[in-house]
Length: 308
Ligand code: HEC
Ligand code: HEC
Image 1 (cartoon, rainbow, N blue to C red):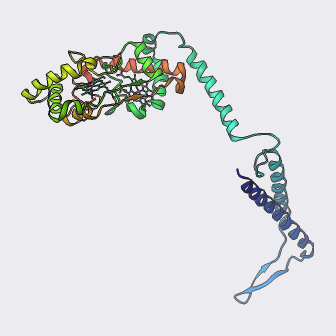
Image 2 (image 1 turned 90 degrees about the horizontal axis):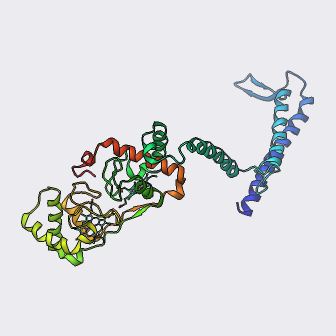
Image 3 (image 1 turned 90 degrees about the vertical axis):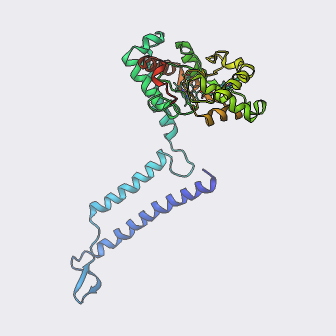
């Protein structure tokens, strides 16, 4: 709060309290003279409609005095008087931090029962799954979808197909340390025709409609420019995050325009490191949860068909 704002708040608080006190004094002084129960304010409406002039009831007056006393005590104890922090030193932030610390301690105690257990065991544990599902909903669903089935550019985590490897330690590492995929832009190296040809070749690998002659020419370009990362048989390389291009499971999309776009301009998929955000216990539980989902899917075919 700036100094000017602090003084303005102090001024408003003082005006309010002093104003109420003044009102109380004025009404209290008037009361004794107006003991006459039939005295009126002197106004008359419609000829004979008049208004009694009676003092405030005592209990009402005491209520007012009570609020003034309350306000002064409150302003001494709590923040409210400009920058003055109050005798108790209370503030919203420390209050919130304390509540979070208590909740975190409780959650940590609950999660501690899973510490040190291997991920496959956790993936089969209903209680671990349910905590993992909550962690997923709070931290992962925005990108991977609430059902973990992904979106274009964000991989499906509920199938049994893994870009960065599906062993429990690989999945955990994807979550804790994050992943950075770099597919270089190759439009300049290939030329327009080259991109069209190699796109046809990529589509042919998944059995999608393609021009046979273009695909044959594209196969040659693939062998020089792409195998370093995607492998000669196009099954990809989990160490680089280079996807399998022959399984009809797509991170970005299977249509020719989307494939050509990636080849022309490159792709830079980023999984942010979540270790620092959610901590080890939650990371292990959410890893177990997605492993459980992929086991349930019963194989990669569950999500085939170009939807991923
Ligand atoms: C330096 C390594 C590298 C080279 C060379 C490379 N790629 Fe890639 N490619 C990748 C990586 C890594 C990704 C994943 C990008 C991401 O996740 O954002 C990728 C993604 C793709 C995709 C998207 C797959 C999907 O599921 O949507 C296609 C298609 C593709 N590459 C085709 C090619 C073709 C064709 C070539 C050769 C002309 C090529 N790549 C060369 C590393 C490479
Ligand atoms: C900001 C978006 C974002 C958030 C949030 C996010 N992810 Fe990811 N995640 C990605 C992207 C993008 C990739 C793919 C990186 C690439 O192109 O290879 C990915 C990849 C992964 C992979 C590797 C998948 C594979 O096939 O190998 C796993 C596992 C994963 N995320 C789990 C999670 C979990 C669990 C959470 C929550 C704790 C999470 N992600 C939160 C964007 C996100």
